[in-house]
Length: 257
Image (cartoon, rainbow, N blue to C red; front, side, top):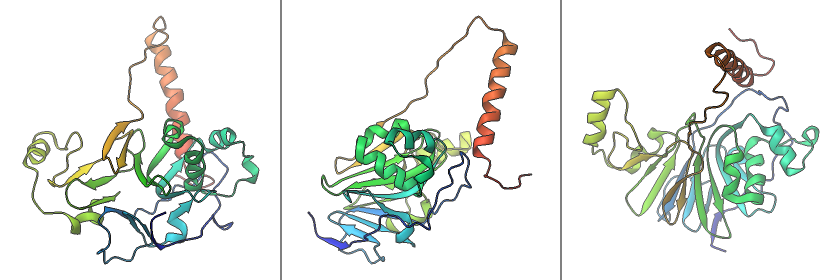
């Protein structure tokens, strides 16, 4: 196994409990970034580093998760609204689970690898480092609720959910095509950003290193059902779905306006 700069023997603290209710308070810690490639000269304080990867974050004991076998390292922002269903797939009783959603992803990935992505429902942008295969995969949720950016040139590629976190590592050259699109449409379509050397990972996609390939694990598809029903029936059904989604995303046992 490649030389490791720092090993965090972290399996998850009992103090870090995830609510078993379907709608716990959403909390994210997006101040993490990953360097891939040439990492020997990185001056930032590395929380985890081995081989071609370096993970920089403010609180590694919380943000970096090891899988039960310690073969996988997971870092990122994860909030799952179907955690009870996922625990059932793993054969774990919900009342005995004291981990966070990142730990849940680590166990799912250890069992099904990248094939577990279609099972996840919620908001997430995370990276999984396979220490045995020396493969890094970065994934974003289906609707793009969380963002993920990466540089596309240079000996070192940088990945982060925030543009400002990787701003020091790319040129300030403007992407004129993206600027034209922004001025015409008030947003930048596709994977472009206003910076030439920065791309945005599209929703429902996974980016893999070292081959630097992007594949979609989920795509929006038209599926018309109950065509014989009236417009009022479909409207009522849509209302029920919206009410259910709102209930799931409200914070648990918290006042709302």
